[in-house]
Length: 128
Image 1 (spheres, helix red, strand yellow):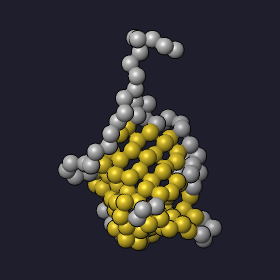
Image 2 (tube, rainbow, N blue to C red; image 1 turned 180 degrees about the vertical axis):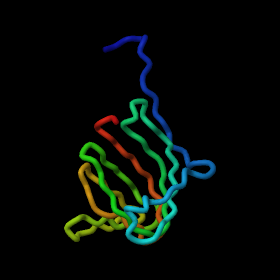
Image 3 (cartoon, rainbow, N blue to C red; image 1 turned 90 degrees about the vertical axis):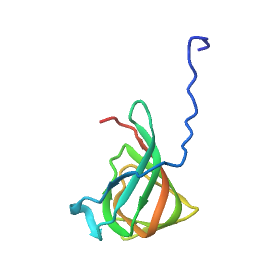
Image 4 (cartoon, rainbow, N blue to C red; image 1 turned 180 degrees about the horizontal axis):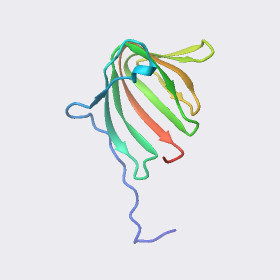
């Protein structure tokens, strides 16, 4: 469709955050090691609420995670070291300079071995 009445979408640049992010901790019932402080700077949210992106930082610790089937996350580690544990005893290390995808339906544990800072993009194929 070509029309001069349509406004094309704009590129959204994600600049470094200014000021503190939203601080939280893993839920108590999911904690396996420690009670790490997590800080999130959401730098983009789609109008339909199905995608968000930003920067996330966390102290050392470990907690269980469960991703619904329609939700997935791509992340790129800027600094630090994380390890994702699956329910079968396997794990995947992701270090500074590396990225990973947590697929929909994944269950396991998220472990921060060295304080981490990462870019993230979360896509939820099904709205709440």
